[in-house]
Length: 83
Image (cartoon, rainbow, N blue to C red):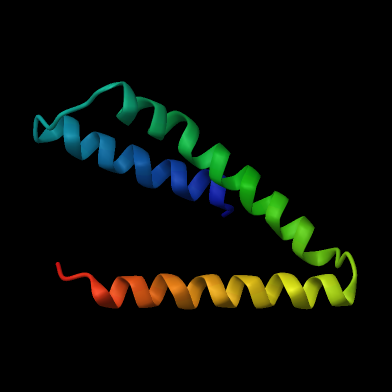
């Protein structure tokens, strides 16, 4: 089962739970249920197709280096915050 259907079914399940337990259901909830799966599926396919087509080895290494540095920075910021 692809992401489109599985994510949509998960959203529908939680929508049914919200209806069952009289939870808050607004426009955002309905938009998430209707559009969450298709949007997620679109971007997964888009990113997957971009990942399979390397632009240039040096550019790919530079992009990977930038992403690694960004994630390390985010981790450091997360360590300094107390929740």
